[in-house]
Image (cartoon, rainbow, N blue to C red; front, top):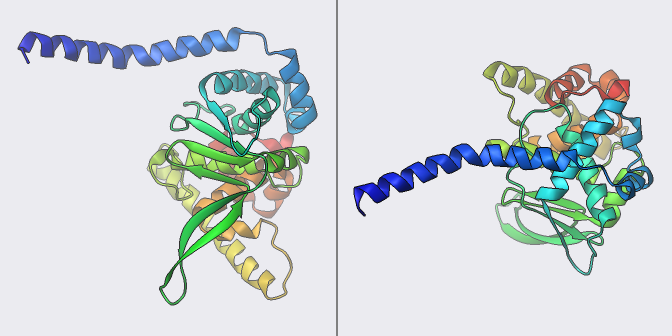
Length: 276
């Protein structure tokens, strides 16, 4: 290839890398400048009562995030699930709670949200205590894949959104996994920005995780049910997703039971839901 053509191609490539973020930012500004549709407001009131608990400035910010999210992310219905504004807005509102007051992108690796009518089967391999690999099929309410997909069961989306105080929300859970995986690993340690922050995060998370594992073991042998969902004892990644659900839906109880954990989550998410 002649040197001149290589030079031109290189210049075009550099121009694209410089111009692409500017173009995206401009498109997002235009999207957020549009009025938030009245029909979407009605969906939020009917389906996502947690939105009404937010301070007015965060409600406005959330609506702008919803507009961008819906403009950029594809929704695909599976097993006959129709994709309506109700489906899209209900899911987007809960996902975008995780973006409030936080700089950064709109789940940049995410391309598609797949929606099933109800729990869906997932095939996976599991190694038993004897080291034998066994194929299993499990019913799931949601999954988050690093390949750019979140999968959700619509009936569980509605159930999770209907009670904003029960600490169970499949959309918040799966999109917490999306944030976690932005570092390239899904390990319960999202991008915190500095080594010092990771040290503080690890100390608070590990202490609460160990406590949940111990409480879960005791519960399985007849002890009291743990404050946090025992599913969080599966591994650190699931623990992060579970405590994120609790942070947004049972913040006052979390701040009492695990004040250091609440403080770390509040620093990461840059909101204080215990005051809503």
